[in-house]
Length: 136
Image (cartoon, rainbow, N blue to C red):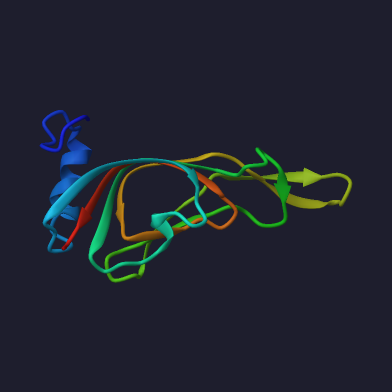
């Protein structure tokens, strides 16, 4: 999809637009592509007058598939700053040295979701492709 008019959007994306565009009283739509660290990015701060329409989100842990005692998780919040959904891609593996289960943190790919902010836990790097709706 490469237009603000959603002419080339998939059916799921059109449905997402129809729902998300009614969530806040917006008057600007900005195409947004971000690739970088999650901490300090605009995605982690809640502002009642903004909403993201995410066509693709790619979250990863900077140490690759490193083992950890806890899994990696992306938490999405809606326009009321309540939890809207989760995204993760963890796999349990047996650690023979510690004789216990560990999580292998792998890349999480999330498509077609709207949110007002996110928290990413152990995922410290994201690539976002979508739109930001703002109310001025």
